[in-house]
Length: 529
Ligand SMILES: Cc1cc2nc3c(=O)[nH]c(=O)nc-3n(C[C@H](O)[C@H](O)[C@H](O)COP(=O)(O)OP(=O)(O)OC[C@H]3O[C@@H](n4cnc5c(N)ncnc54)[C@H](O)[C@@H]3O)c2cc1C
Image 1 (tube, rainbow, N blue to C red):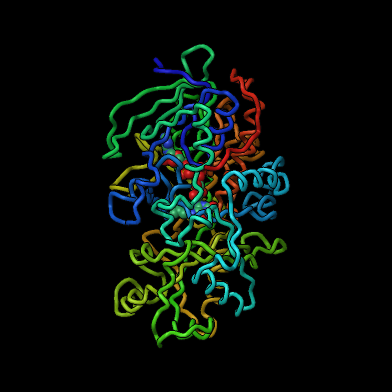
Image 2 (cartoon, rainbow, N blue to C red):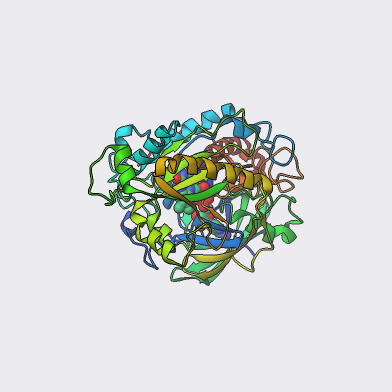
């Protein structure tokens, strides 16, 4: 027997959940949003990596061959993300991958998505960086690119530049309200129209509803805020429309667990997962060479020690995103700051290894390290195994989990990695500027941009959703998060996830009455706070 009813039940409060939550509430629907993680606000964030701080809202999930990092709080991964906000290149939407035909639905092209990208850029809002806003690390990467004959550009960021202090602590939550996460736009907008957000409510399963006029019953566990492995209660809410936006790592698991009760799932649920072609590498700089490249004076061998100043992502080169190049050979190279995490990484995949004098020397010079993110085209080779008894994965400790995802690197993906590694290495090692290292942690793939585990498409065999984000065979269930994005994007994905969620919301507003939900389409983007 259901405890309560609502028009729209949304699972997850990241980009994919907050955006439809805002529009449906603004249209007059009764909206309840269930979020597995806690709710934090600015005063709760700490610039600390201690256990019990940031790992209360970030999970590192280890699968087979892949480690994925994702948010676990109201606002989802937008609370921990680095705010790089880029439109995907046009050629991405024409990708054929290993299918041999266009992967994206016919209804979506880069030009048709531009309208939705613009709305998100205004709602968040996204700032264009001038070169005066680019700190040392971004400038050094740009100088290295320039000397190697490549262009390099500042990266647009969802950051209020007037509030940003360049403290470089985005991943632990911004303590200056400068990062424009969902906590500053769509979520307060949804709440201003009466949407109810319930943190520490972890959805387990969707079943058919019992009450006339309602389609689905969504069951959840109330999570103990002091120990996420324990539950304090449970409940069920019946809804006319269910939006699953539990993220790429959460959405397929809920649907897999619901398969029996709902009479089956499309075969693409939990398959074709993409790691966005993410690959992390490092350059360890020779400070004397840096000095001559930048024309800056410093005592011999002394690091500038300026990497910690700035924002984690500042510049990137688009030179390798040539639409004329064959698929699996196009990629972006982006400068990234992550030394505190780098220091903890178990190893690099070429000499020097984790043990030994060479590795010790390398670690001692970590202040001279720059991380590079390579975003390539992968082959959607990720597959989720059977779901755990409860939750999205098995929690092993604070912020650490073991997941069901397996990611066997396909030869096409490896080809892209090899080309991207070679390009990054050639830029960074020119004239002995730096030594180049790729990461070999416990797993081959370090992914912060998981996508496509319940993707859209035109072919029912290889896509779980139709081009309106509706789950095939289950009218009234929609997926609007990163899981719905069909392919890797060669850029950071949040703006594309958000643009697709904007588009899906507009379609939902027009179709809600088919499911018994009365809404008016105001179409106004939220006012940023
Ligand atoms: C450290 C880091 C840095 C990043 N930097 C960038 C960047 O600079 N630019 C960029 O574009 N992207 C970046 N990303 C990626 C980006 O943050 C994500 O792609 C995006 O936020 C995903 O949005 P989403 O709505 O799909 O999922 P999420 O934001 O992950 O939201 C899913 C939500 O669902 C909740 N949930 C999961 N399971 C359940 C359940 N069973 N019941 C209830 N709730 C559930 C989760 O707790 C979460 O809040 C970064 C990610 C990380 C981790």
